[in-house]
Image 1 (spheres, rainbow, N blue to C red):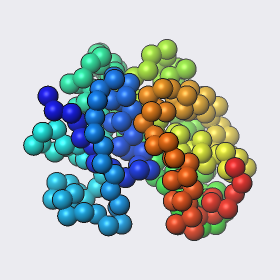
Image 2: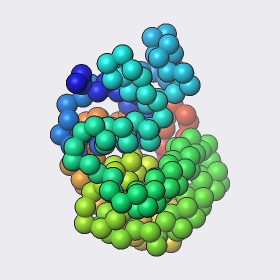
Image 3: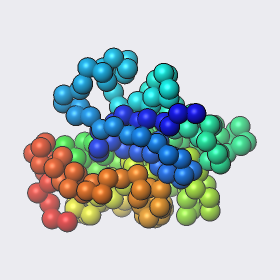
Image 4: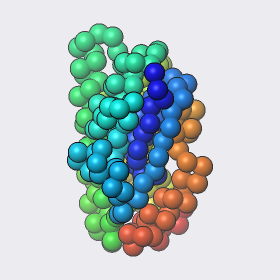
Length: 219
């Protein structure tokens, strides 16, 4: 089988789902980063929605981050998803829920003033509060790192970066279990390996390019 080839941009938490999955399994892969403000023609030809991530597996293209991550989990062992169908379905449902938190994370990274940032933080905190009772700890389902952990790490990680800059926003104010889970994921070897070495510089540059309020907050 040809190596999986992922296409993304360097700060994308959605492609991180697939990269963390591959790193956790020790699978070799290729990755190409593109400029979303200047998408190359070859990318638009293979991405029907014009979005990242995209997976090229031989001559076949897959899109949508959850679909890609589940495909990679199915074809490369050991399987990270639960075997039980009902539990797998529950994990899929919460993977979708956590993905929605990414919208608040992006809003925090682009907010032009503190009031807008606070509104996004309140929305994220509300989402995390509803997540609390689902987390067993130290990972989502207990002691084992599973696909839901791989698919949640990027979104939670960006909330940690934001919280480090602006703790007074209270991102995890009502969600201590979510914070503990985020910190556990942040220290996992596969999550670390999925990031570019200069990711904090990339994060800072992104904030600056969007004139984000968060960019002016001290770390």
